[in-house]
Amino acid sequence: MWLHLGLLAVCTWALPFCMGLLPVRFMKEEHKSFGMVWVTGWMMMFAVFQILSVPFIVCESSFTLVVQCYTIVIGVLSVVFLFFGRSCVTDCLRRIREKRPDRGQIPIMAVVLALIAMQLWFAFHMQYLDGDDSFFVATALTSQHTDTMYRFTPYYGANGELDIRHALSTEPVFLGWLSEVTGIHVTIICHSYVSVLFLFLMYVIYAQAGTQLFPLQRKNKWLFLLFVNIWYLFGNVSIYAAESFAYTRTWQGKAMFPNLMIPALFLWLLFMAKDEMDVGEWAMLFVIVLCTVFTTSTGIFSVPVLLSLAAVLIAVSRRKAFVLLQTGACLLPSVFFGLLYLFLS
Image 1 (tube, one colour):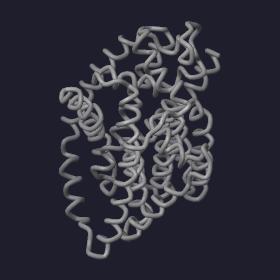
Image 2 (cartoon, rainbow, N blue to C red; image 1 turned 135 degrees about the vertical axis):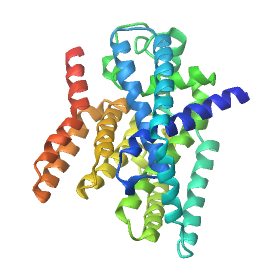
Image 3 (cartoon, rainbow, N blue to C red; image 1 turned 60 degrees about the horizontal axis):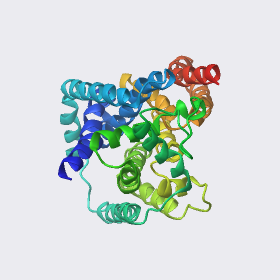
Image 4 (cartoon, rainbow, N blue to C red; image 1 turned 45 degrees about the vertical axis):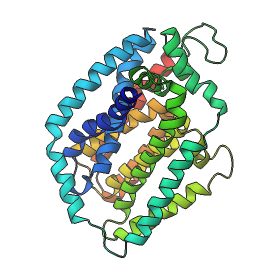
């Protein structure tokens, strides 16, 4: 049991941390933090899996081959990123020392952290079977048991043609990889671990957004996080609300898209609006666009509209047309996978 838990900790904590060091190293100084390292690390892991697995899926190769190749690639990349990005650790530690909370912040911090801890506790102890588990969890499990990807219908196990509607969004296969590497059943991983892990990741992203919204008013950052907590706690006005998906479908791509990818995109839009985009920020925007495709095919079509509109507004307000070219380059993953989707349909 301890071996399985150790492998799970390595795959979901150590690997994202290592993968995030190099991108954050090339970001602006005010964006460097351990939270940003962890967020960018997860985005890098998702993006690498998307790039590597889609050719195997389209060519109808085996799931085992994807597991072996991705494990080797992500292991090598994590070592390389750790080596070349290790100086980022010093920068993050320095920023922690510079931004120690004052007495006025401590009470609101305690309330926010208590609310987050409560939600994580409930996410672990009060999960239930969701209807879409018959696709997301079953697709991961079917990939493991049949050694194929998107060939067998997860609802009743019939063999058929490649399910191109879902094949370009590889999040269920990623969960299958995590289960295969750790030796823990994918249903246990989704309901008892990923549900907590991605909920915590969501709040880390919102914390980065709060830092950008209130760079000089750190107490307001925690008030913003308190507002976000209340919004999510009481935002489940229907079963289809993003807030409901955050708690009941956390491990599903359709929940990751509104609760992880969209907040991350808006965080990067804040960077763009404040003209705080360096090499690392632009590279990560490209990666995040790739990650939206990883979660759901909806990202192929909706994200270009959002980013294009934002780029036009920013270019006009700052009188800087070059932003349009930079944003267009970051949208290339959506263009590529959109064309691939149309070609294979």
